[in-house]
Image (cartoon, rainbow, N blue to C red; front, side, top):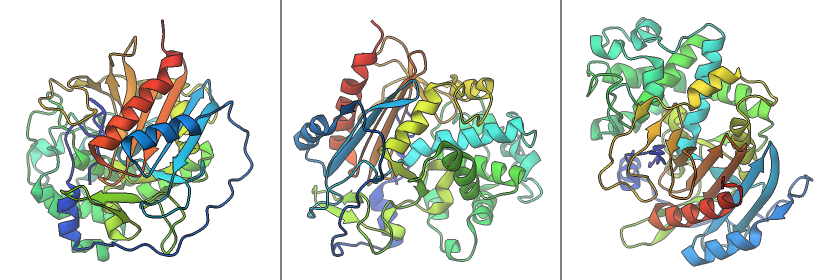
Length: 415
């Protein structure tokens, strides 16, 4: 799993999990594809002002990707969109604008928004501590770990480490076959509870998927529903994200979405269809398992660009502003992953980065489960958002989406 960020995006300033490690743990590898499922005709929708298909096809061809999709939203309106390529290498089923792409760690901003809803309802506070919320369900927490706050968890400032071998063993655990996801998250926390933060909370940035798992458990406990129900009912439904779901993009037994690809050390790519090998463990949902069409992804990004001033009114503008604002400097990142700036700031689920081609710092994030890649860019000053996605991982995909992001944003860049 590579819930990869821009950060500093972080969704991953530090890689969260190598796909090789994940597959070794799962001991699964699918190499054949089912019979093709014909692409479904998209539901009637307003035609975008600009068709990006030609540009995206050229980009896809240069970087030899299975597919690329992209969209631009300005002042809440979809003004450009396109999708090019096929749902899986070796097949001819074309992608459509309604096809679902995996968002990876771009899901984190949605988890942060759910936290904002819990805060506004009075069920949580930004300074709610792990021990105060989860102490009864997870007794005997390390005293220092118990003091870490919700805001610190969601800004990667809680001293929780980036994924380690020990944590990966907890995520890829056979307990997943015995428990629902909300209690399974508590079991992961219980197994980790004796660890103290690696650094003093609030002092250093550590990109931590475990922090989002813990934050998700706090939200579940406070609001009384599983994270999966909350994101579906409180974000997907009111925003009209009808394509949105969780986990692997394709329906079991069907090639009805662009599937991710596992790439081995020799560059050979295998389409990953469904089941455990097609996504990260669902216990990590709050850190990165959402998928949706590029148009729905653009709707989500455009709502953020509007600073919660447009319907639906999910939280107050001041709550979203707190989620968006910088909470911690990421520090200088030595040898950053491709596409990850060497330094920046992080909010809650959002990186804040000044790019060479942007006049001011912008909200941004990358998301990858090591088989797909998605990027989001939000300029709140100009109420513009750009999203891109591909069903392929790695440096080539990252370079392609970075090039596409720059090209799609530049027409709206401040002089």
